[in-house]
Length: 309
Image 1 (tube, helix red, strand yellow):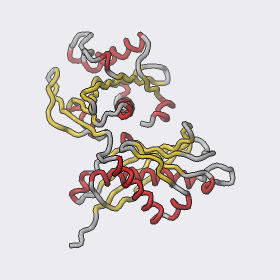
Image 2: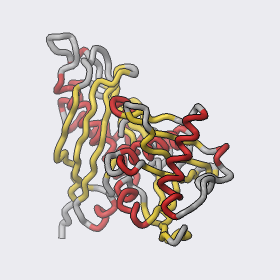
Image 3: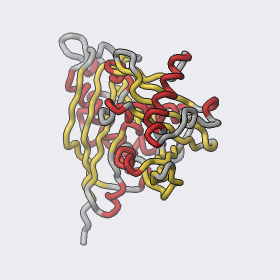
Image 4: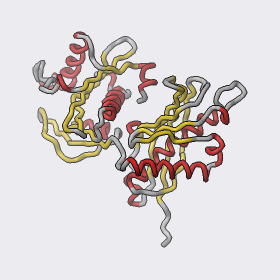
């Protein structure tokens, strides 16, 4: 869930006050330990001081979900103690905390996350693009699975630059509108793709950006993130937009930036290698400076290449 939209309903932050920490550990114990008759204090370990903690509260300030991240090695971190209050389960609270931990991990240079998931939580983590590595130690008689998620695409900086050059050339040569809009890729680091289109060639009678240009900027940025993933995975296919929805939040009065993060992508591309059609849901946010102006959610499909046989 995008943090800018998250603020409209929930607040995601680290615990600060003594009351925050008390509520944070209480929810951990209540959800993860009390049902198995474990004592207070069993919800903590020796890594608390060095870990990164997040708590999610609702508009009334009530704590509804928590999660923690700690370092494993220079490139790997582990998610632990994910807990959602019973009455808020199934409403996206856990995903909001998990994505917050993922974005923090990226900011710290981690490339992979690990976690141990209860069997009952497997569907949730699979939807968040985590993959099963094998069995993990059981706890309180509950079967767990070891899971991982790669946070950045495989590739060198040189490869990233070449893929972006090829992508932009593909846009301009096959989609004339993108060239007229002067759409440009401004950065890609294996995790975040950013694109821009200046206001002047996309302006409307109100001196703001034409809604169709905003939609096109968002659509092609999402398409671009899909393209870059295929390059990284060594896969190929025909990319199409199956469904797209956009929310226009604020007028665009100067050059906007479209941002797409790998952590906000949903859908496994690997079946394409076996000749199967795949789909991905990709979220793109439009900003002017740090003002959130639009959010686009697109469902993209990749059709396997047809054999000449």
